[in-house]
Length: 236
Ligand code: MF3
Ligand code: CO
Image (tube, rainbow, N blue to C red):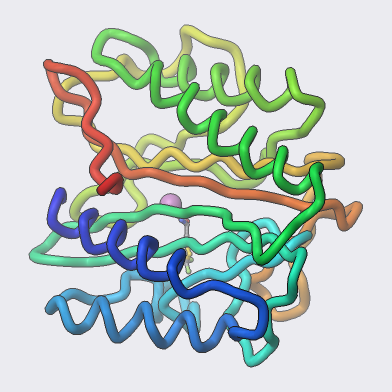
């Protein structure tokens, strides 16, 4: 899994270097797909339940599963990239939200709090804890800053399948769910809205947007719980 996850991390690093106002999300998708294929790997999302691209590109009020298009990024946008890779029998999955050019103070804070909430959740991803300790830590971090955590999408186990048990909500009380054990591999992925937590799906059947059209950010890492602590596989 560390090999598939490394490819995911490298693609996200490459995207980071390439985003600027004027580039289209389709161009970024093409870059990502050719990079993944050049490594002998396969883009995991393409064709998954009919999803049409290699990367999910979610701009501004789009929460997740935005579809790349010829639409160009503009100064002041925020955009999240979610990428899955299948390599030598195993999956890796990660997401990052970037500012495009210079963004508002609130947009920057949303990005920072979302990333920090993922870190807060991962601090609880240690053997002996319970699954919802992660969920509760994410939620606490987000709500303390006045933002809201999306309920209708969750993190997941990952390994030989993209989505495995258990589901990992980003909200809830601590101390519930399965005990975390060495060998578990999880994708933790908070989605955070500047306004309310409700989301709706657009007519394309994929794109989730905030119901109140407030901004949304998304970060995700694939991690492995080991007896010596957490291994963040999608971090370079
Ligand atoms: N990280 C998301 C997930 O785990 C992305 C899936 S996108 C899809 O569900 F295209 F594959 F559906
Ligand atoms: Co995922």
